[in-house]
Structure formats: C-alpha cells, structure tokens
Image (cartoon, rainbow, N blue to C red):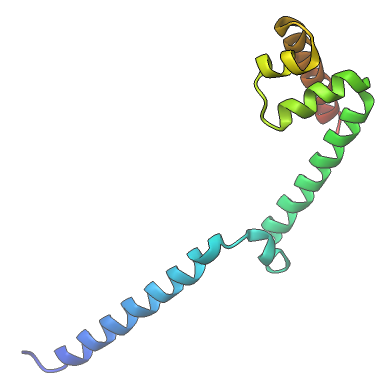
Length: 113
C-alpha cells in the first residue's frame, strides 16, 4: 500500500458519511421550503405568489352566484362531474358548462392581476 493511502481512505469514508448525513437531513420529514423562506428569496417570493393567487381565487369564487360557487367547491374537493351533477340535481352538461364558465372568470381575473 502506498504511503498516505490509509489517510485518503479514511478521509473518503468521513466525507461519504457526512454527505449521507446531509442527505438524510434534507430528506427527513419531507422538509417544507416555507420553513426556510427567511433565508431564501425565491422561496419567499413563491409563498407570496401563492398567497396572492389564493386571494384572487377566493375573490373570484365570491363573485360567482351561490349555486355555481357550490359546484366549484365540490370540484375543488375532488368530486367528479357526474357526482356533482347528482349532488346538485343538474345535468352533467349543465355542470360542465357552469364549471367552464367559472374557469373563464378565474382566468380573466388571473390575467388582469
């Protein structure tokens, strides 16, 4: 074995263990980027953009008539169009049309902002 080979092997093992430790830390509990927003301007901007988008969506939903707002809320909750038609007592085509109208209104608001 050449001189210093033991030292390089030991340093390689220490480095690999440090990298594995860092990887485990960053993957632990699926770390949320919002927890680090104070130190990363991109994460802070993304959080601000998400808050603004949520506000615009809430504003758009409030501008809809109550029955249509309920349809959109069911869709956001993950209900299929057929289920929404059954829940609301409307035809599937009517539900599709009302949801499409809501999407257009939301798109207009997002484009304006």
